[in-house]
Amino acid sequence: MRLTRYFMPVLKEDPKEAQIVSHRLMLRAGMIKQQSAGIYSWLPMGLKVLNRIQQIVHEEQARAGHIPVLMPTIQSADLWRESGRYDDYGEEMLRITDRHKRDMLYGPTNEEVITDIFRAHVSSYKDLPLTLYQIQWKFRDEIRPRFGVMRGREFLMKDGYNFDLTRDAALHAYNRHLVSYLRSYERMGLQAIPMRADGGPIGGDYTHEFLVLAETGESEVFYDSEITDLKFGSRAIDYDSVEQCQAVLEEFTSRYARTDETHDAAIFDQIPEERRRTARGIEVGQIFYFGTKYSESMGATVVGPDGNRTPVEMGSHGIGVSRLLGAIIEASHDDKGIIWPEGVTPFEVGIVNLKQGDASTDSACEALYAELKSKGLDPLYDDRDERAGAKFATVDLIGLPWRITVGPRGLANNKVELTSRRTGEAVEMSPQEAVSRLVEVYQPVKDAAL
RNA sequence: CGGGGCGUAGCGCAGCCUGGUAGCGCGACGGUUUUGGGUACCGUAGGCCGGAGGUUCGAAUCCUCUCGCCCCGACCA
Image (cartoon, rainbow, N blue to C red; front, side, top):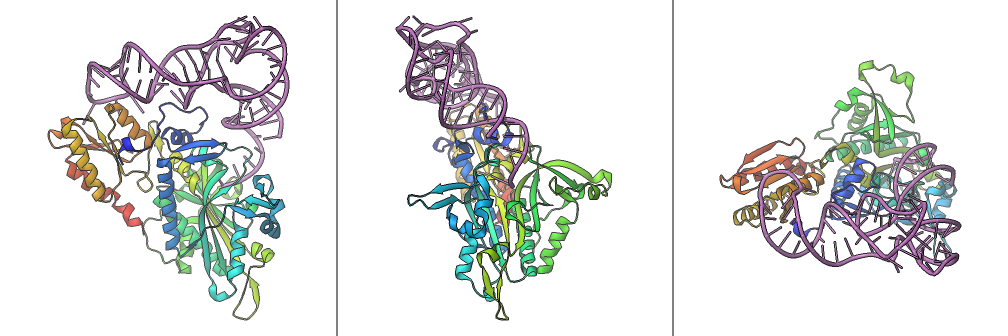
């Protein structure tokens, strides 16, 4: 993309309403625009990152064998009366009346709808196991939205639901989700630690939430420092293998890691003191096993091999997709701006032309731009007639992980400069070398994709 | 929902107390200059001062109501 043809309304000054760094940077980088309290438009670059995160989630769900669907944002109140949650959910649920005076609502979650779909079309144990999921907008009418997309009222969320015949099968689905979530977060450049959690309004006796450590996190967390050494990495896993998934769950949940909701000081104090950590975390996902809570109240049953009708075992699983942009920025930025991890960056590299209008730098930039695109990379070419300082400031602010600087001085020796946003390290090399170096850098990202 | 604060140009703000018909910086646009970390100078455009009502000869300014937004708290992915 050429910057002069793009729409990226960056701000030089901090908008006063933004208090935390991710909110400030998303506004300054021209990624979002607030339309109303807790409700945002996604501008091109914000949308790009949002889409990349969605893509990772889709790919990892596919890998785990989960099937995508798309359910409506507006739901009938009747379904919620059936489950008993219409009255329980409270004022967080946005209630709407249509022209026929029917009670509707903007879905804050989808257990009712998915259960309705299931009971309409699934009736035999032979159709199980089944996990359906979607990435869809939700609305929760928070009393006080804040922190930009970290706690908006409208938010994009992946929600998945597993249906199984037995408790053991449902627990395997739970484990499978845990593994797929670990992989997803790592591809986004995040370390999200599974912590024992509280059921909340969804209920359930077995649940973990995934937290990204960051100073601005909303939850206080307590953990054994050994847990931060764990990496899922690129290990191969058979999602159908109960043993393999169980082993991963045990590996990632055996050490102490809890939020303040479930924290138990007596157990925590048994950890050697030098490994005890207290920090803050941002919740970016949660997985639940809740058994037959919804299937019983809503009549989602299957006929088992013995000919008896039995309520299905269920769980639900969420990833806060839009919130993840905030979480990633909270975990990865400096005083100049965002630092995108390679897995989610809106553009893989920025090309900075130091002397726009100069025949040799212009043509060198154009050649680089074309070459990078031909290698499957997506560069942002800053072709504005601006001074070097302004271009550097912009590319730093928007957080592209790599920058190629092209100026007459270097070009005289066939050199450009390749700079890492994260380390600031700059190396002179030929344009061809810069391209191959970038291809190399992004190879793991390509390899991780399906 | 309790407590606090703010709505004046795209963004950040001054002016309001002590009423007299709106200003600064950044940004935008045009030009000159400059050119390896937000260059300097000159010029131009842009605002029914959140909205409604009232007081007054006259309201951004005073009064009443209202809408929106932000912060702290309780709540929450």
